[in-house]
Length: 130
Image 1 (cartoon, rainbow, N blue to C red):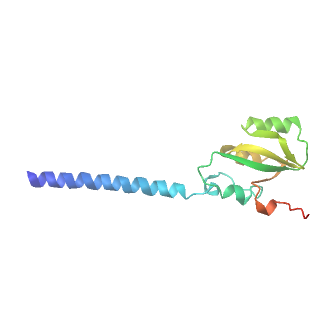
Image 2 (tube, helix red, strand yellow):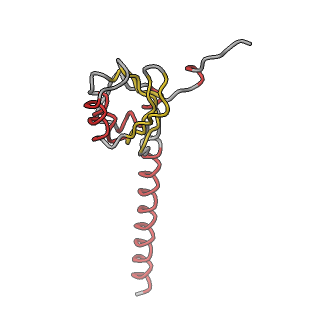
Image 3 (cartoon, rainbow, N blue to C red):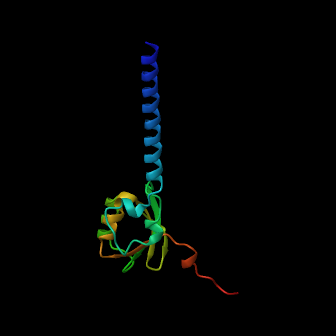
């Protein structure tokens, strides 16, 4: 009977070890994914600064380029209906800062008034010589 218990114990340990291996492997694979891999759309309007974010990103604070400003009330309502927050205090020429849930990115780029979505970095910085 002791031999039978040993085999059962061995099988239980193997199942637990396999479970840990499977769980950690799956968790590691999802941690390495980027937003581009989890978006349902691919558009040239979405900059790599957005698509290279982690896939588990839930909201993005980004600059959005519009084809004209100020945006009209109909477009503002369509954007806000997607749970996107428009920061009226931060407009630079044709660029507005928006808080975009990642689930709304694909719907946002379908608007013809939107020309680009990006997160500013050093490459967009303007330097002033003094």
